Image (cartoon, rainbow, N blue to C red; front, side, top):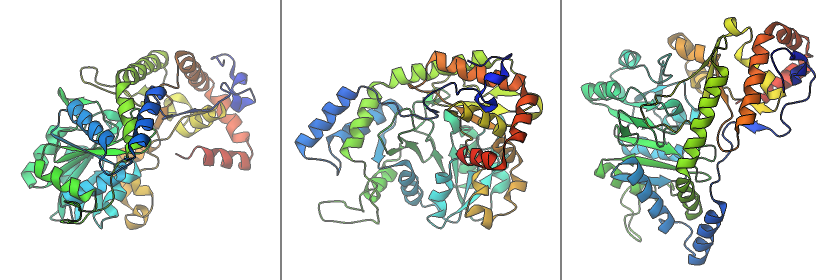
Length: 415
């Protein structure tokens, strides 16, 4: 294991990688595989594989109960859930969104001919800055889409106030925020609707899947029509729609995941606390905190790397970690506004997004979840401490690497 006095043991310096197998950010949690197989077997015996089967119905009931909402509609994935929610709430024209998010947030709007207006985020929370939202409003603005990044809620009250005052819609991309709370209330019942992701990389997963939560019965009814081609009866189509249904096997995985929910959260919390303790006091390395007075899933371990203080840039530290088979991620590099088609549409957007631009160069996410244990975390933290303490030597080594090797490393570290 590297330590602060043994820089030569780092793999980037020619040593042996600390881990034989790659440690990923977001490796799937499985839960009780025997229980999952029982559910799958039951599904096959019934011969009811999709079209609102008993697993999906039970999964929706359990989600509604856990989130404390009246309606929860399961979908095939969260991107389709966002698209349906956008359509069902009648959004048009322009919608204010953060650029500091996964690209699906922006694509779900652009796909439907709606202009995503990129707004800067708060440097502490990484969520939409309500003061900047006010500045971005135009006569064409029909809604705000907040993102509860890292499971840490937006300033919901401030965004709701803006939406009410300007009579526009408010929806939330809650892909990170399942089983999290805001002022004692579970995320899911805020705004017009909130969308969750149950992708395989999320701590609760359905292989692929999503869900839309709302307390608006009329909106929920419309969403249910839209996720099933608009079918109201056996052969009656009453609304435009698409195929957004969750299948029974995915729902079986979701139910199995929910049964292990407490264990998943406890492991995430334990991992987060160990990272916090072992990286405490390290110059230039800030671990984003969770509000421990609220419910949280602790799904992400996120660092901000201040290069002048550490002596290494975030990208240089990524190269060090990847050499050790620790596949840390540069979420959400480089920001939606610097991806196509948005960088062509809005080539100067970065001038309005100084915080986003800064975060894109600083943020690093580390492995956690059921696949990561205490010894592995200790090793990862030791690698980071060693790299920071010997930053000059490592930077010199990186500068000496051949252009081909450096290019290959940069390609490998793309998120």
